[in-house]
Length: 115
Image: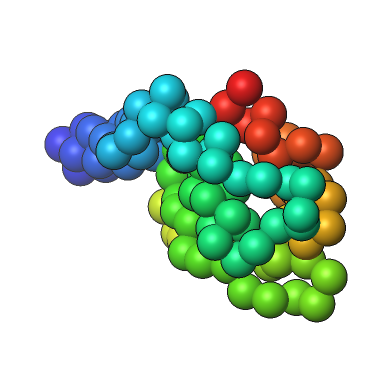
């Protein structure tokens, strides 16, 4: 009986992690991302939008927690997995918008997250 209870709990956790984040549709994320103007560099608010869009599309279990200044780049803060492990090495270049992610695809042009 304990085995079946543990199995059901593990399946529930795994299925929960695969559930897309609630909220906006892909079309709504795309519309939000289109407000970012890369021609003049990436502001904090634009980096916030890019980070939110990235997590909405690529991170099924975890979440975006914010943006912080890292000099010539915006550091993206977030967690991944049911253990909420912090994401390290995730950033957005302030000048070009290039997004580097250790947890999924990186983008030379972050507007391609939702093309």
